[in-house]
Image 1 (tube, rainbow, N blue to C red):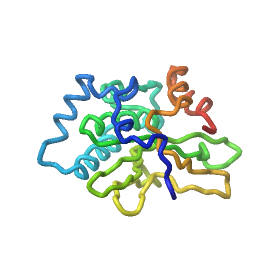
Image 2: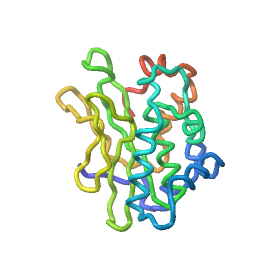
Image 3: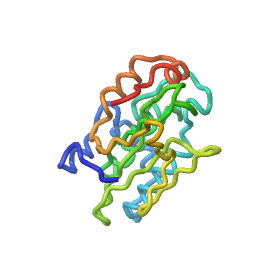
Length: 202
């Protein structure tokens, strides 16, 4: 898939944002724990991805009501839905000067179109040493989901079924999409939000 950039300026993918608050002490401490100067950017990207994928629980998987949005809260509570997890991954990598954006898919919410659709979030990372963007999905693996860090062939959590009206949004956003931020701010129960209030399109 051909990806398009929301901004031509790589620096826009390094900005600190309300949701991507990498100056927060908890983010800085975790970055110090995860990274060291001897690591390459590819190693840092893999380490950050695997940390968020494996160590931060997906709220739906653990049946938690807590809604997180800011990267610092996602890290503090060690949970969030895919939107929140994408904010944390971006914060960790931007703290290391690695440009990181946000990508989205439209997926069936459950297993059939009749049960509705939702927007799913993942990340794009720019690797200067390879001069290319790669997409990764830190949603969290479980039975039937095996997302991996790959610099060659994408290994995302969900294959797209165009015949069932699923789709890729080809834009790499510099900021989390306003619809995504809004739903996290408007809801206080993650399970209820997941079932009934996730946006169906961007």
